[in-house]
Amino acid sequence: MTQATQFFFLSGAAGHIECALDLPDSPPVGIALVAHPHPLYGGTMENKVVQTIDRALASAGYAVARMNFRGVGRSAGTHDEGRGETDDMMLLLNYMKQQYPGLPVVLSGFSFGTFVLAQLHQRLQKEGAAPERMLLVSVTAGKWDLPPVPQNTVLVHGEHDELIRLSDVMNWARPQDLPVIVIPGGDHLFNRKLHHLKNIVLNHFARD
Image 1 (cartoon, rainbow, N blue to C red):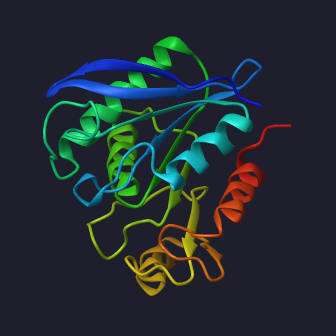
Image 2 (cartoon, rainbow, N blue to C red):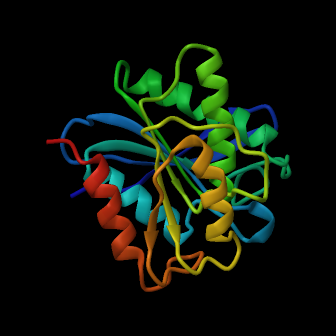
Image 3 (cartoon, rainbow, N blue to C red):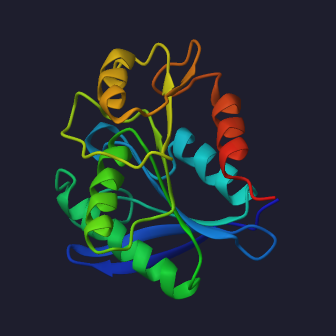
């Protein structure tokens, strides 16, 4: 069970940022951020894959925050090709750390959101503040220059993803020796397969 979604705004470099917070019924075991798909192709924080990840992480005990990227929903600004979006996600992470100090951090994203959070991870790593875990769903291998990610990253991809080829994901993951969880028959939006995604998240992130 989780509590009702709370909506709030943060003040970023491009103006106000629309954010949402989902909390578990018990004290959170960690902080999680969820990043949505590409804003120029209809991506929002209400995307059904983003919401599936969000609810599963909240059910696993995390305080889960997401935002509408610049120019989406009630967020100010315009799309910044991942640069400003990474800055804004850092702002959200710092806010969450202030609200829930000392908790482990999970960075999770879907599609374009995986590119943003891979950049955020790289920045945090350079600052000596790398998150404990990452969850990348439909990672954008072959579309953007993705930095390496940690060995314990959970990668999930649809077998028949029509936007990001599974072969490109495998070619990106192979040199890093990263396992990829493939959902048979899954397309980019995991139509009729979201229950599998939910179960994967719960299996990997639920705390005993």
